[in-house]
Length: 387
Ligand SMILES: Cc1cc2nc3c(=O)[nH]c(=O)nc-3n(C[C@H](O)[C@H](O)[C@H](O)COP(=O)(O)OP(=O)(O)OC[C@H]3O[C@@H](n4cnc5c(N)ncnc54)[C@H](O)[C@@H]3O)c2cc1C
Image (cartoon, rainbow, N blue to C red; front, side):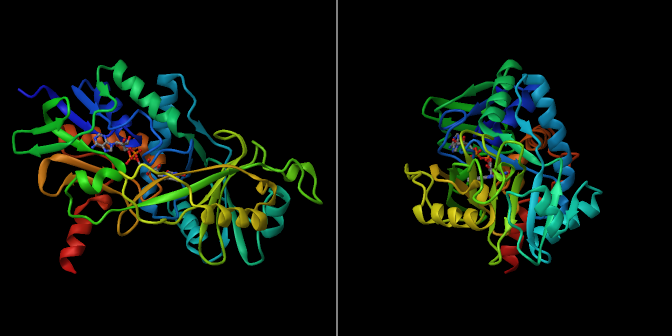
């Protein structure tokens, strides 16, 4: 008999949640991470992650998001730790751009609460932001942010409390699978299990042997000192904690986002959501790109002047990008007992709670009640072979 029901390779956003859901169901779980849990070398560094439901990327994500919200609240109750904060999300962009159009489409299809604001209304309600003529603003009251490290720690702690074995600094070096089960090799031993979940973030391209082109990129973000009083403006224009999270599409199509002051450390965190330079995750350097920090600072000066104080500090972490920007999640196309999870392309953290449930379903029974078929790795392999 296999010693474990499921081995998890990676205890980051998705892996920590999967360890919790599996252990809670009574499965024998071994969860291994190459670093500490959490760590700043992977895709979850930088303290905070946006969560929102009016998903401009595709409306098919919305049912998963509804469940993700429920599970984040469950996690808070079970762990006693607050991880989800909902000051709302302010969206702004060209009226026919992907951000505004896609958010409205998801909201309409799934009857989500999203307020459409005229330029004047947006200006009166959110004076810290400049909405250019011809751009449209939306406000989603349920949107907000997650404390990334706290969420991973809470999932991992509860997994251990339910009997999972969770180990830091034990990278999975190799794995093999056949119809009876899987074996996993680390520097400390060889372990056997009925199934294996590969959820190794930026290391998926080398570890998963998927045949899917996943591109790892370095992403820079920075914290800026909020200005207590905007030049020529009243104090209410500063980016204080009661301000919303924001996502704004610029005239050239670039998407910038930011958090209220103090959401995850000192200052206002802001960044641009676009894949950066390709990188090797084993490169130890996570040096932020100076030019990117300056680009974000320039955006803040134009569009979020209340946040455009001096830069306090900057950091970088990794996106794992699929060719179509959607997650890669499902059974390994070549191995029935192996599940692959790359919920990234820069937008996966908010889903981690529901990913945990889906990965527990897939590894224990081969299917899930949640609609994740649109994320299957087969869509990409299939497209590639079809040319
Ligand atoms: C700058 C930035 C901003 C982002 N903003 C948002 C946002 O606002 N909202 C949002 O929803 N998402 C956001 N994301 C995306 C989100 O953080 C990722 O989608 C999410 O962290 C991916 O989770 P994961 O579990 O796949 O990978 P990770 O969280 O990186 O976890 C993977 C884990 O696997 C471990 N590992 C790697 N190789 C091995 C091995 N061989 N053996 C054992 N363990 C291994 C790693 O150490 C790591 O802990 C952002 C990402 C970045 C970089």
